[in-house]
Amino acid sequence: NHIVNFGAVYMFDFYKAVMSFVAKKRKLPVRTYTFFDGKGYSNYLSWRHVSILPQLLKMWWILRKFTRRISRLLQDAGNTSIKRLIENDPYLHSLWKTPALSFIANNGIEKFHRVYGDPICGITLYCKSENLNAFTYLGVFFPLASTAWEMDLSDTLAMLTKGLEEHILLDEVVRVTGNDKIGFSIETKEQIFSAKNVVFAAPLPHLKNVDSSLPQPHSYSAVYVLNVVGTLQKMFTGKEVVIFDQKAHDIYILWKQIDDSYTVYSKRADPPLGKYF
Image (cartoon, rainbow, N blue to C red; front, side, top):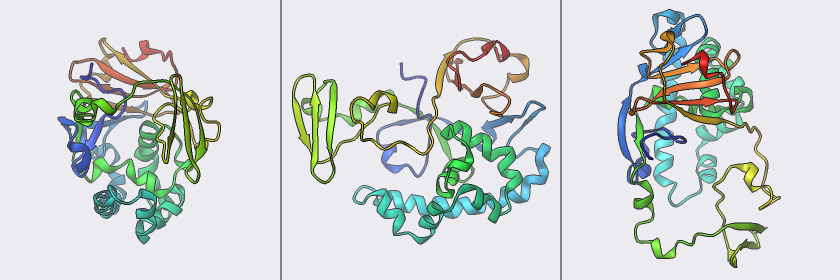
């Protein structure tokens, strides 16, 4: 069903194009995100880490500028590639070329990063902060600067394909050859197509036999998503979203759904759920 989202979970008010194809569910105020470090809980506004407040305020100020630039970029993205738009914006391009750890050190937000930044990068991108640039790093903190909403994808497919149903072919791609300079040849089980551009939307391991020339990502992690029905251990009850320290836990997050089940993102296919339920 579409009640529980297993992939993209939330969106922001400046996602104007996406808003046309999804519905809003719950608002996710910044206090929704709870961090568990093994000793206790905190969130962005917690007194437990009041010493981080100056760094939090600095990060919020940076994010306001970044979010305004991204919002402007997305308005033009329908006609121009994201790559070109970033290159044409000196501020965004500078962030793209700056390693995340350098950005953190240059702005003196090391403690904010240690308590909140690293766990958020883990659950949002499933990779370590040292593998990111500053542009991508800032992108995981949009909830600090913009209203976030859970998405309802129930009618998304019907809206995306409205009027195009007769032009959609269901087939299995066997092999893709070529490139964007000479064009592509797409071989399916039924026939062969030619195209100027090809969009791949599938897990990378499933594509290695389809197109061996696909570039490998700089950082790649396998993530397992489980939908669990059960009663949480007492220490985790009463929290909508619990983000875990990946150094001490096999799961990244517990996310309560509107049907009272829980979405669990895990490093393993068989995480020790008994520790949490």
